Length: 103
Image (cartoon, rainbow, N blue to C red; front, top):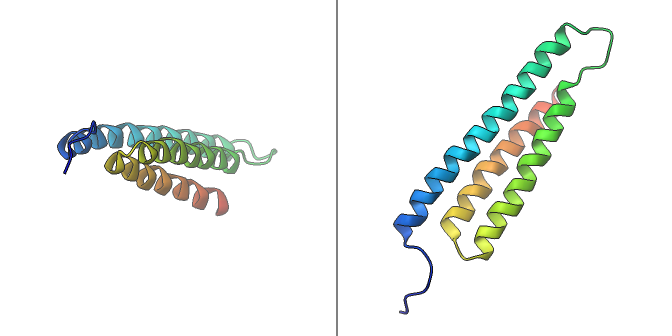
């Protein structure tokens, strides 16, 4: 068994935890924007609500991030980090899809 240039599993887990924190902050920021937009829509009864559009935008941002970062890390053979990115950002994209679909 040869030793490659890949980081150890422990280093991959540590970086995955750091990326998880960044991912959760991005999802929280997008949820905050969705919530503020939904709150503002309650005071603007004359116009169409903008919150579903914000949710769709958040979904596409997270889905694109999952494909680019998760897929890129998996392609670089950093499987642990790539799978964490795919799962977390993919779950966030599904959350925003459900928010947009039920609004």
